[in-house]
Image 1 (cartoon, rainbow, N blue to C red):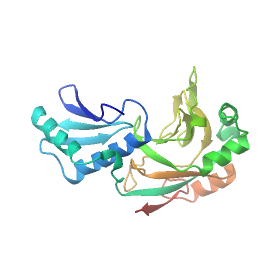
Image 2: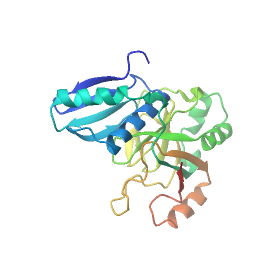
Image 3: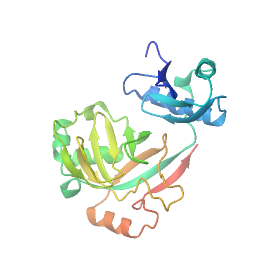
Length: 241
């Protein structure tokens, strides 16, 4: 990642602190750590911040040059690639893989060189991190998956996947926060509601949280979701050190 991090203007209202120009696990960790430092010790003149896959957005409330200089000093203060992640949670989210709940699991498994059963076992055992939230409120992009899951997006769109669908492409999983079309392959279904206005907090997952999608049957998933008043489909979580 030679040449990074860099600070770039984003229009007239924000700065972008970039740690990489492509998906990179270490750069994403640096984004999360750097943004956490801005929350804990705000930079004068900096407003709202948000971390993405490889950069941190900093909205300007003061003079751009002064804010940029302060950000440069913060960047120089430590090796952000080696910085620890901020406090986060480990989630176990029940998921029904394959069949009607994961209509493209077989295709994705074949592209990864696995049987559907092997793919289900591999995906349910893999611990992924919330790399960023986006598209709709609370919707997580999760990774980074092993290289065998570096699958291209589809050339066309699936017209509709339901809220709670688990889809896969380019070494990432996305847990859909709403019913929507997608170019990613649906491999499973959860009962997880990414955003609920009547829940505290409304957005369940935070960047940096870690997640496993444990395999359950479709019937078990429906039972768990029906008995869960939190809107997380029977998911459990615990604090990570």
